[in-house]
Length: 383
Image (tube, rainbow, N blue to C red; front, side, top):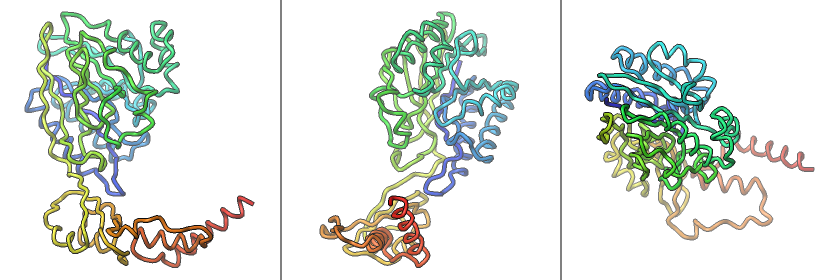
């Protein structure tokens, strides 16, 4: 059987106010092309389908159109919930999507209650163990659902490991055995674009606790594509777009798994080329003007080097570079970089200096008026 592993779509994600919808549409279309070309039997989606727990209609349209296309190809999919997905929202559409042969698992359950998804194709049977994301606050409830084998542990990582072990007990020599999980493996490489609270020690799971009898372990949560040293072949597929500037230079991909009973799986990665590259650029205004044609269609975070503030520099850069999503000043003079003396300084004067440093111009009258009103409210509230 042939599987395609994809993850962390984050549909509905914008960057500095710029919609990524067109890029997501192109990336999902590219994944469908890979599904057809590689004769995939089942698609594995390891969480964070949406960027928000209340996704906009356009994001839902993209997801449901993708699932509808899979149904037209008669290809099933297994989807688990991630930390960005709302479990109850996924639960509400689970039965409808089941009619399309899309198997959604929003929360952990025991093997007999849906924790194992069985897929049959070409005379072979796959047992797919599924472990959606669990917050630290809900780990006790999940442990109770999974049973006494898990409930007796106290630490988050131990409970997650016990869940993996319990689900892995359904694997057999005569089946293709896969596991899907949305979690943070201790020591794995992050991008700083994931939610910091969910990639810290309380959430860190030891990879050595994964089952040793799986053909493949499909992970979601971290956006950097990577293989994890583990008793079984274990991969983060990564996000399908460069979602933040912490992901620039990453080549996004899907993973294709060719697995058969009693044989090691063959694993290949296929690059996704649809998304736009993110790039940090810096230089003086003259240098950036000279280089502008070389930035192509990349989305930019621009640092403007200068020894003094340039009035209206942000507007100048955005006119020069329409794909500049963020413009930042970068002082080339050490004196400019030093922190100003603030003792005894009028707060409004400090605000104007800060605003000028960040934007290269003085605040407009309406902005200045708003600052004064907010400052007065803060002072009155503290009295």
